[in-house]
Length: 271
Picture 1 (cartoon, rainbow, N blue to C red):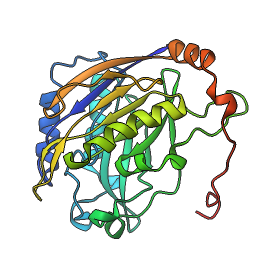
Picture 2: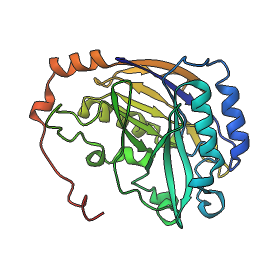
Picture 3: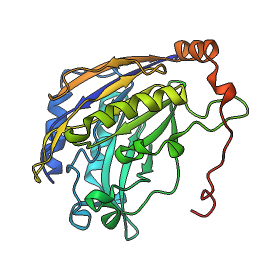
Picture 4: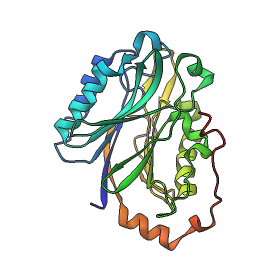
């Protein structure tokens, strides 16, 4: 397959109420039939909102009702379902982006860059590894919210066999409305500099602390142009299509990758 049907789910969230959020999301996805899409993307901490109450709200990975819900939704809908969840594992707490496949298998990425302005670095543990998953011939680099501000972490690293490490970047977020311009700008910048489409899903509404979120969820092609960019302040479920052949043709026509600087992260082995 050369196409990736990608469904963005922009929604409001019930504060620290996983059961209500899962029910709300099921209702939001009711019109999306089985096998209508390849990938459903939910916001960061879709079950709780961006809570710093990690000790109270994080669920054990091995016994998480929210992770089980993701797996169940993936099976029912015949597609991958992904979003981040507050997780406890072996006494550590993570803002974990879970990638649930329809066959029941899961992968995950733990958020690397923790938002210190909200004290996230004091309530959660930092992720150590970049994670790339595959779907319909697309290699997808996973990221969460604040990661978007750190281009070195998300930069394409030269693959000797293909020249590209990944074919799309996925970022889920709870990105506040006062900083909507950086969110939109950084999504497009990451696409342009990496010659890779970007999938960005943010929430809307207001959280329990009175912080507003503008959404601005976007599906962006490798040229930085938006394929989905609508209903910025309202909930929506919208599906767009990424095409692997179109991406390859663009990379061939505009081979900026040939002039990219080779590099290595100094702390890879240390961490």
